[in-house]
Amino acid sequence: MAEGPWPVVDAPLVCVIEDDQAVQRLLARILMAEGYRVVSVSDGKHALSVIAEHQPHLILLDVTMPGADGHEICRRLRADPRTFALPVIIVTARGAVEDIVAGLDAGANDFVTKPFHQLELLARMRSAVRMRAVVLRMEEAHAIVAALANAVEAKDATLDGHCRRMAHRAARLAVQVGLRDVDLDGVAYGALLHDVGKIAIPEPLLHKVGPLTDADRATLARHPEIGERICRPLRSARSFTPIIRHHHERWDGRGYPDGLRHDAIPLGARIVAVADAYDAMHQGRPYRPARSREEACDELRREAGRQFDPTLVPMFIDEIDQAEAGLPPGVPLPPAARLFAAPHSDDRIPAPAAR
Image (spheres, one colour):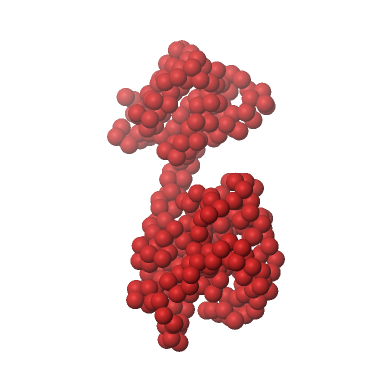
């Protein structure tokens, strides 16, 4: 293999999916001269099995091929959790605007027309490899966040599934409110980690069935601030630590830890507060039996304007109806909100005067 910008062991592996043998050989020669490793396949029928076997870092994909066209391959890659982030560059002679749009809609990251310029192709490939590295770092960060959420649920059996349900429901409400991109991600992560501070709360107190003393309440009330400190070192923490700190604030200013009221409470925290209250009521707790969906929603309505943002309560209840009817949210939910499948109508969920 020729010298290139990467050591051979670390050289990115490119899968060339191209039925024209001359183009296939040309691409292989160019890539190997630049230090890439190459695996080639000539038809769409075997492309997915080759990708599964070799696990390439990037794919160069023709559109018109026997077996399955490039758009179908791309759609199937995006539907598979193992390959949904795999960079795909379509290399094709079909360069009309509608062809480009069709390729991008199928999930391609980039588009190069034949005859291609070698320097342009290599530049686009380097960009795609760099982007994949960024995505992988984001996935690692997401794994850390999910592990923290699992640690909370493992410590308190009554919270099994609570954080994942919270992320799903809070994100759906955030979509309806109009949040997108970083703000939507922040709500999902904030909901997933809202109770992470309970890692520092003694287990006997978390499992206590009888009435809480003033000292008990004071200890429990520390978990939002503890959770904020735990998550602050995470790179993306700025988008969700205010949610963790303020999810027990109340619309009327009688919450904790800072006694914020009305719009002074971050919007994400107001969203999570409604979802948290509903889940605690509908799912039940050792100190409180589960309530029906209707009872939980009635309690939310009664507390609108006191405990909860009055504009969010009817939107949240509407979103529960939408989810139970099997209707998807207006935009795809972020990964942190997809750890829990949309609930069925008989699913039980957690509660208002949450501890």
